[in-house]
Every structure is written in C-alpha cells, then in structure tokens.
Amino acid sequence: MPELPEVETIRRALVEPLTGRRILLAELRLPRLLLGFPAADFSAKLKGQKIRAVIRRGKYLVLELDKYALIVHLGMTGQLTAASRDATENPNFHKTVTGLQKPVGVHPVDKHTHLILHLDQGGRLLFRDPRTFGKLVLVPGHKWREHPRLSKLGPEPLEMKIAEVVPTFPKDSIRPVKALLLDQEFLAGVGNIYADEALFLAGIHPRRKVKTLKPAEKTVLLKAVQSVLRKGIKYQGTTFSDYRKPDGGKGGNYERLMVYGRGGMPCRICGTTLHKTVVAQRGTVFCPLCQPLASPRKKPV
Ligand SMILES: [Zn+2]
Image (cartoon, rainbow, N blue to C red):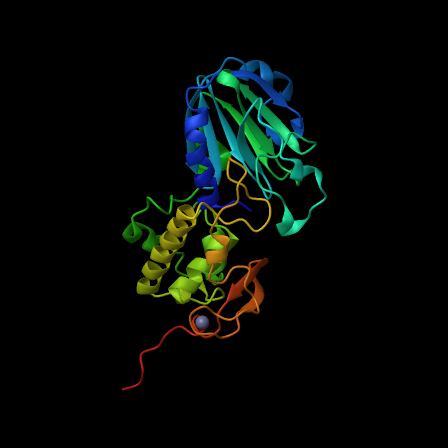
C-alpha cells in the first residue's frame, strides 16, 4: 500500500504537469469509488475547473480546484499517472505478467482505469486501481481538512516537533508499539513498510507494549520514523508490486529496505536471521537481536 513516501513522490511529480491545468472532461468509469458526492454530477462539476494545487496529507493526495477539492486515497494498488493524450503505448503491457514482473511505464487505459481527467494542453491524469480499494472524495470549497476522513489525522511526521509528540504516546496502553505507529490518528502516513523499518532503526521490538517505552525511546523512535520516511522519499518510494511513480516507473527504495519483505534473510547489521510474524494483524519482520523484546534495563551495580 502506498504510504507517505510513495504519495509524496507522486505529489512532487504531479505538481508540474497538473498545476494551472484546466479540466476539460472528467471521465469517472467506476462510480462507486466516489464517496459523498453524486457520481452523476461529478463530471459536470469538474468540467472547466482549474487545478490550483497538489497537496498531500498523510496518505491522501488532494487536488485543490477552483471551487472544489478532489481527495484521492490510493488504497492498496492505486496508481496515478500523468500521460499526454498522444502517449505511445508500451507493448509490454499486452503480455501476461505477474508480481514483480509487472512492466514499467504509463499503463494504457484498461478496465482498471477508473478515472481519467482530460486536461487542457493535451494532458491527462489517470487513476488506475486493480483491487479498487482506492477512494475518491469530492468536497465543495477548500475545507478538505475538515472532512471526516482527514480531520482526525495525527501530525505530519516530517513537520512534527518531536518534543510535542512524545507526550502523546498513550501512557497506559498495552497495544504493541507497531499498532500505534500504524494508527493514523497518532501519526499520519506511516504504514506497514515504514513502521517495520522505523522500529528496526530504533532497535525496538514491534511487540513492545506502548506503556513500557521510556521517553528517550519514544524520541529515538520518532526520529527513526522521520529518517526512514526521508529515505523513502529520497529513493522515490518502495515498489514491490503495484506502486508506480506518475511516469509509470518504479521507486528505488525496495532494494534499500532493512527488514520489510526480508523475513528469513540475514539482518543487514548483525547477520541474525530476520523473524517474520504477525503484529496488529499485519505481517511484520524484525531482528530478534537488534530489537530485543525486553526493555533495556540498567545493569545491576
Ligand atoms: Zn540484527
């Protein structure tokens, strides 16, 4: 699932091709992906609207238009690509491929292309989502931050002040710390990949109970979250299956992950075999040596 670094990579790549462009035609091909707005009115409302800004909040991408905001959540397999109307099709997409063999490049319009924004100057924005867990929300005006899906989001990890977030760890919680990192009301934008990576970098076991974390560990963990997210953005996101940049290319962070997707392989730091387990109903990989379950104790004098 695209997380903060993937959505931010998409946002950065869409600013130039989308900002200032006018929507000539909005072609919604799977109306059930649109929430909170009558699909029958969608095209009429978007026609003629200019795209004013491309913004990210957590894992959400927001297109601010003249009179509306279009909120996009990519779900599990959503892809947003920018392609000119006369872009040539990549013939590799017509071969049967699976998993990691999926070709790169802008995918031609097919049965999984659920929204096409036709823009002036010959541009198009394509939203493609094979598993259809993605969501589109159209809200009038620019008060999208008040929409129920976004109003409760926690702080932006790359903009937060760590000293202000440390006291927001619930003090009596017996939840595993990984569950807290995945909680979008605690922090916005962290998902399974970057939660595992941050816990590894911080040397904290994913099953540690939140109430056992010391303030210094919370600080280390939040710094680790920022570090792995920045690295993810630097390498333009993690592609192990469906995530694509707006030019259709893959992100470069997959090969650089320390633990996620590496269960059974040796730890890159100590060589111990990485364990794969389930925490907070999510597949979780950690190093049993680098991330001990017991909280560190002072040695007896
Ligand atoms: Zn290790």
